[in-house]
Length: 390
Image (cartoon, rainbow, N blue to C red; front, side, top):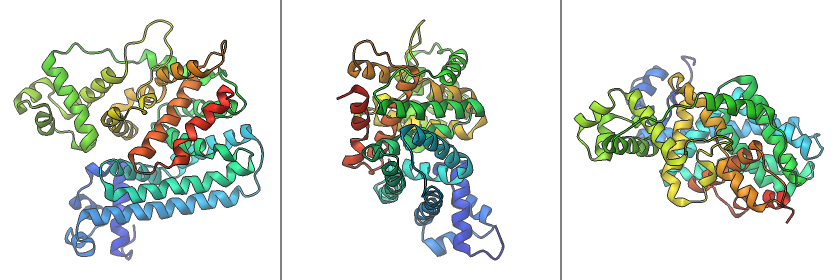
């Protein structure tokens, strides 16, 4: 930031930095003004209110994202090949977006998070979905899979959400590349491809899976209220007072069960775990944490909570123990869906389940953010038709 930078630009820059560090729920006018090194009154002078500043920052993010994707498109103008080649490119693009443009990637997630709650944000979110479609469609056309471009858009969105969660860099990158290769295999009707990196990650995640605590009914109720509060207000909005109101309990009872904010956050994580994951038994497939249930609109609150917790885990070192669980213990119900459509004798793998989970995740985010279109909605069906041979 430069002292001679226009006030509006300094404020927008401060918002984008805060989105990466704390998210929208953690932003305050005082904090933004302090970051921008200007008086708080300047926000209201230039924008009237914080919402105006946040929406303008969102527009700026979309413009910068558009520039980045346009640059990549120019560099790829001569690239052609087949589905397997495109899978390599997809993996590289996911990684580059999450690592090279991490601030923009977080800001895009904050736009989505706000669009899930406020209609005023859905126009910006829809612009993001159009941007992804306009980037991937011509590339898919050149690689001979133009009809499958919606599945690429959904996979890009679903997997970038999880790739922001850093666990073990080399394993994360390798497992994500396996997932994209699995997508290419589906095009040829192949399932059950080996995924050694994902299996390694799953074993490590299971080894670190937290024990389910022994809670009484009141504690269960408070923990469930904590999960709902995360869905409604984001992680920074998770306070003892907010949870007490949501749980219809006294502040004293909540504070006695969960003494610190960290305790409340862990309770929210455990409540979601209980809601969407059952304990694993010997020989069980990877657990589906949330995405494969996205076709059920009644799960929208849990989806938003999971979305917020995923963002929090990617930011907060205190949630690092959950990183592996969030990234890799998914796909169980998805595998059941796949078994139902695959020809007899073909057994889906952990990577197949994770891929369908990622596709469902992107599809649901499109719906919840107002960005769903018939083509995007059909993206999952189109690729599944290739896999099943229909």
